[in-house]
Image (cartoon, rainbow, N blue to C red; front, side, top):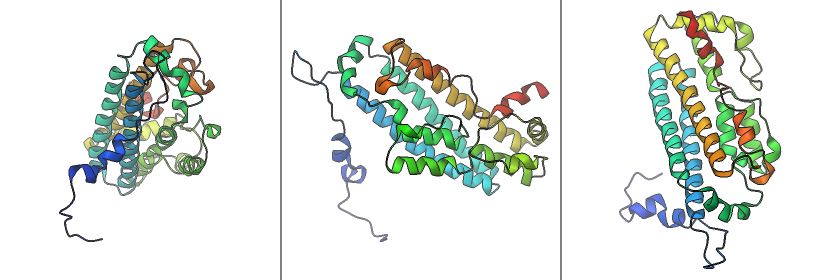
Length: 268
């Protein structure tokens, strides 16, 4: 690849702005005007931006796994702090969505047909990468999405990289945890908790543990805001695509990705 600058490059061509702005294709029609319902554009933009942030989160978290595998604690924590800022941005986008009333959403909701946020393959990849692997619903996906999800489901998570890091640093992580089937969910383990508590004597590992806890809390905050936004918009109605809507989303609350990091709070 040439390192010679392209002097014809512009802001628009570098970011592909014309292509980007052509991707908001509304499907609704307002009977009174013959034009798309006003709020469908907002709905599309918000969810497309979500998918872009999910792409960035996957990019960052993959690099964090590699840094943890390379024992680069400080660099991994630095990248984790960026992930936390992105999660705050995701929560902030809910504020924008909540400016849309139930009536405004109802104006175009039927045009979504079977399309549903449950079909976000990237968000499911994020769950797998963070170790949440007890909700494997591949029936929602098709084509190369299924293969991507299968690869994620069979690959070590951020948590696996963390406990292996602790083990290499000399903390007593049990072999059963280090050799576990990574396709299964993360379960609390008292021996792992003891190893984490011991690691907190080292400020670098204490900082890493707390930043991972911040990550887990940030994810739970986003889930909570998402549930409340759905309840505010459609109440107890089923979600689009036949999903259970807010009722299903509520089952994901208060289920930490890293349960051992919460269990150790009473040890100090």
